View 1 (tube, rainbow, N blue to C red):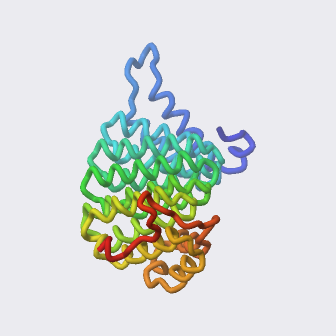
View 2: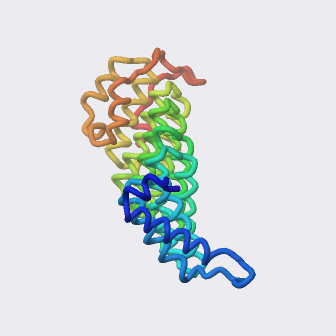
View 3: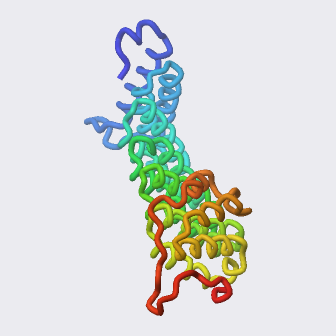
Length: 304
């Protein structure tokens, strides 16, 4: 924990160390004490954690916050325990202990769920994901998606939008475009549940654009067909843009693809990460697609 040198040079640190030692004794079994006294020990750990943090001793502070969280949990106070674990998670991030960051924020989220606080539970997962997304992107995506699931199960679909955006952004940075498109499709479904029509239509168009950028016309086309089953998207400006893009791809017209992107009134309102991909379309070689009847080109009148 704290060194003797630190203790001697900082009276507050020395006092914090005494608090920890006293609290440790209260929580340990002995011949004269058969039960740990977490009620008395917890505030001592809390005081010590705050003192260590002010003294810029993150490792000592983190350990004290974790012990304080244990005390609050033993005292049936999951909310306070969760707050302490979040504090410990922030310190673990400062120390570069990213596996600990993930574990601490997940545990905090679980404690918030226990006391019926779904929004703070999702927020804790988001905080943990942001803290590790540059070094552990896969774990961060899982935390973002878990946050979305919590909110959707609680009927707060609209509150999940930022988490979906963050997850999609990570996948795009990793060049995992099909995974990103899947996130956009799921985002669109969440938006549909809460009648957020604009967000729904933008998410569906984003998915189609990402599939096209990944040079996967078949998935883009299949997603378009699925999404168009929803009346809100079928009648939207975003749908019209998708039709134009898919028509240009079917006809093998790269110049028309660029023209659709540059003149679109809806693409500029998508997320920046999608706009950047759209401006690079077509990303690969484009050739006309002929169906089984020998017909190429997507007739807009047939789709409307």
